[in-house]
Image (tube, rainbow over all chains, first blue to last red; front, side, top):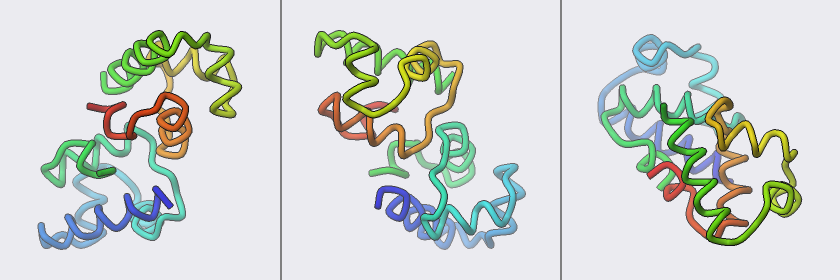
Length: 66
Length: 66
């Protein structure tokens, strides 16, 4: 449940930034397939991953799990 | 850095609850050695782990990374 909520926030913020999954993955130094899995809530991100994503998406880590 | 900050918040909240690492690990269904590693910031918790800890510590996940 919490992973799904997280994934939806990432997807929404990525959309607002007009970034493709590929662009986000490049900027955050993560695999595109991993971004896809996170957005679908089928992987649980580590805090390190959350930090990478938050930097690119321009929000704090807490926002991602709010 | 973010893992160290997380670990210190966990340690502080655990202390306030007067829980030993062993008691917290039991309640959160995590290994005691893993709790120790998290508190020292040498492991990066997954969001699932953060959720387990937040439930026992009585705070939201966001508080743990605030």
